[in-house]
Amino acid sequence: MNRTFKIKKLNASLLRALKVASFILFAPVAFATQINLNLSSELKEKVENDLSFLENIVSAHTSPLHESIFGKVDGLSYKKWLEDRVSVISLDLNVPCENKSTTTECISDETGGAPKPLKISHSFYETNIPQVARASVLFHQARHLETNGTESYPHVACPIPFALGQQCDQNAQGAYAIQSIFLMNLSKNCADQSCNSKTRADASIYADQFRMRVINPSDRKAMKDDSTL
Ligand SMILES: [Zn+2]
Image 1 (cartoon, rainbow, N blue to C red):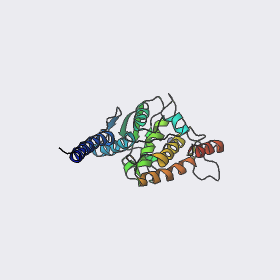
Image 2 (tube, rainbow, N blue to C red; image 1 turned 45 degrees about the horizontal axis):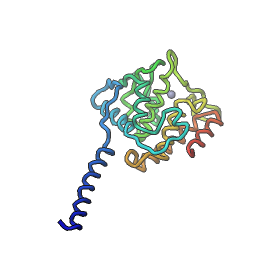
Image 3 (tube, helix red, strand yellow; image 1 turned 45 degrees about the vertical axis):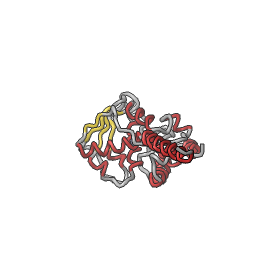
Image 4 (cartoon, protein in one colour; image 1 turned 90 degrees about the vertical axis):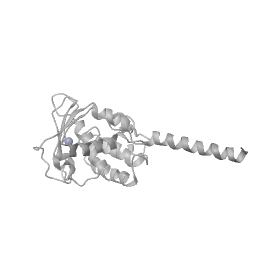
C-alpha cells in the first residue's frame, strides 16, 4: 500500500467516524417527558412536537436573567423546568379561547402548588402564531403554577394609555417577562441545529412584544440590557 493510498484510506475512515459522531451529537433527542399528556392522539402529537422542540434547544450563550430563571439555554434545563411545575396537560373545552391572536387565552392553569395540570383548548393549535411563540406559552402558564394555593406571578392591569388591558406584569419575574427572556435568548443565540433563521426572527418579534407588558420601567430596561449581556 503506497503512502498516498494509506492517507486516503485514513481520511475515508476518519470521515465515516465523524459522520457517526455528528449523527450521535446532532440527531434530535427522542422525546420522553414525565408530564402526562392526557390528550387525543392528534393533540398529543402536536404538544409532543412543541415539547420536543424545547427539549432539543442548543445554545452557546445564556443571558444573566435567563440563567437566574431557567438556568442555561438548553433543552434539558427546559424539560426539567417544565416537569417541576406541570404534572399533566389535558384538554378542557371550557378554556376561553376567543382571541386567536394570542394563545395565552387558549391554555389555563390550575391554582398553585406545582406540579399541577395545564389545560388547553382545541384552539391552542388553531392560532397562527409560530411554534417558538406557542411553545413559550407553556413556560408562561407553568410560571403561574409555582406557589401553593394561589396563582403565582398574577398579572396586573396595564397602565393607561398602554392599551393591553389587564394582561401586564409588574416586573421581570412575571409570566410574560420570562416568556420574553426565553425568546430573546433564542433570537440571539439559538444554534442552527435547533433553530433556523425564521425561528430566531419569530422569537425576536415576540420577545419584544412580551417585554412591552412589563410595566416597571427599570425592569423593562434591565430586560432590554440583558439581551446584550
Ligand atoms: Zn398569564
